Amino acid sequence: MKFKHTFHVFVDNFSVIYKQLLYRLVISFIALGLSTAVIYPFIKGLTGSPDFISLKEGIKAFLINLVEGKPTELAAATEQIRQAFADVLTLVANNKTNIVWGAIGLLAIHLVQSFFAGLGNYATAAVINDKMALRAKSPFMVTLIRNLKQASLYSIMYIPLSFLYDLICYVGIYMIVFMLLSLIHINVLVQIFLYVTAMMVAIAFKMVFTSDWLPALIRGKMKPGHAFLYTFDRRRKNTFNVLSNFVILILIIFAINVAAIVFTFGAGALIAIPSSYVILVCFEFVNYYDREELKYFIDKHTIIKPEKEKPVSREEFFKGE
Image (cartoon, rainbow, N blue to C red; front, side):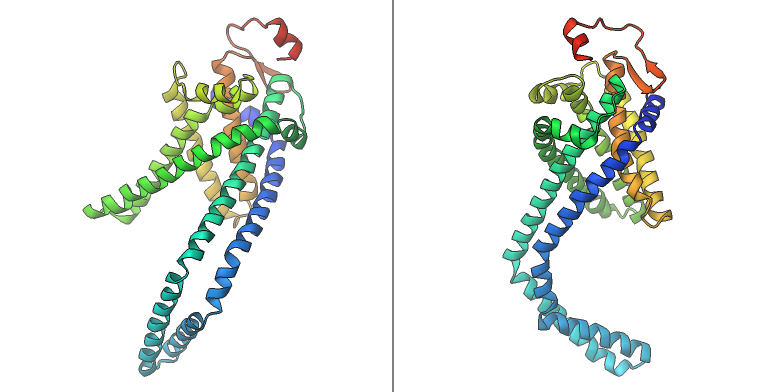
């Protein structure tokens, strides 16, 4: 039933996808501009150097001689390419300091972009919760500004943890699948299959242990520290059931995004990617509402009620909870 209710809530909040898309496009363009400003001086210096120009001319001469069938001149072009490539590597090695600072700059831009993306995810979750709990149509930007303090605290806590977890998983799984398993001569296609499968399971695990974070903050009205501890406490939360649901959701999302990129030449990704974030948030809230035995709307005419409703306190009643 969770999938069915998640789909209904997703359709009921479909307009949020366009707001999420616009928000992410804005922060992505800003991040792209800053990244370009960081790497452009180095790229310009590299491509304008005599060594790189010599490498480019050597490759051009090699291709021309190959097409025209001049084997005697291919050797000279090959030697030019080899020497120029070695000189370019030396040039890169002599600029290690600039490369390191550039990498640090790009990492900082990525973390700041992820921070603002986290703010957008919080606003999306708050809009969806308002619709589920009260049928309220909350404006995206107004909701973001109204919850800016809470969203910032959430993003500051979530982004570094998520980045470290992803980095450990990407590197660790890569070393196991492509380096360790290559010693026993496993087929490359099998290695790719194992890597993608392991990454999907790793992502599902991360989502299981963070799935209650936003609902606890927004619907549960918990403080950031309490919500953080609550989401990692998996007692009586049907962890394996939630994990299996997340694995299926991630497989569906991955398949839809790949199809959108391949069959629409990337155009479909404009809707598929923000939809992925929205449907995951919908599932997190449906899972939270069901487990906490709270009633909620899945559309204008349908309310999902638990078998046994919790009595509403006087404070909750006047707050509209």
